[in-house]
Image (cartoon, rainbow, N blue to C red; front, side):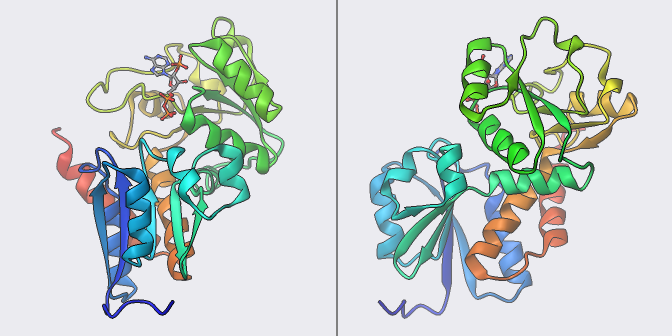
Length: 276
Ligand code: ATR
């Protein structure tokens, strides 16, 4: 079917809540900067099936999918790419001439961000947490030849995830005995407003060459601050967020994303929100 009579392309984010999503700001800046006639709109979705039908009916070009819909949305799409299927979550929909295709760019964003600071192949990474976010990270690490070691408050969940992906896991007590090159936090510990929390209470962060947090609010979590003081290289969740968005942009438009612009608008917004 030939597309719309509107001269503007529409992109969207589906979430609930969605008011705090930084995707509209980031993607609108990218669309504007590359000269696209397009709007990127946040939708607080109350009926997911109908919302996905709306992508077809309204000829929305692409959609970012956020909590709590990343898994639930999958059954309403026409195709799911291999990575998203393995991870069990879709964060990106591309409307390819009426066919809705689901992708997961969280793992690419993560890999891109981490690779700027360290090699992944042949390296061991302690991954804290075993929820939805951990799945993308474990998938990305393994694809790049890294070796995840899963650690979680509920040990049975780390064990189950490790079995599924064929990687290692460790019990929390005794984690200080586990040798690894890097540490990656996928838990919400340290996220605003509880910025005094940390997923790593030990004073031995110096044994990791690189420490990454997937949290980007605050930009530097307590974990990253302590890691920096301990001499580790640190990677903020902002980089993962920006690069998962850049991959979305590329999928939708076929263009390289203006990453520096995207980073700048998000950082300005986070700085403006920071009460300190
Ligand atoms: P997401 O899907 O965004 O990853 P999630 O599924 O709620 O979110 O997973 C969050 C992870 O952080 C889980 O592994 C959770 O541990 P449990 O499996 O024991 O629930 C972990 N987590 C959350 N709050 C935590 C806390 N206060 N201390 C330790 N781990 C925590």
